[in-house]
Image (tube, rainbow, N blue to C red):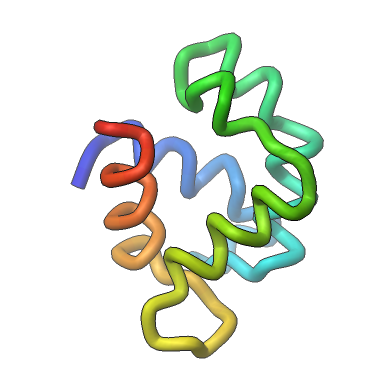
Length: 83
């Protein structure tokens, strides 16, 4: 799993608990997405609306527990973003 995925995960983990919820992903991508993209830590096309952020969460949540671990998140973003 890539270092970019780790950096993005940590940026989106708003409460620093080591997991991501749907709300965290949506809020963090809306608030931090443009800056992360400008820094090269997120593709510009990865900065989406609520539906796109929710779809990213759903694709990554392989076990359906409504919480993303780093491994689930990294697997999806590495695949989706080509990292």
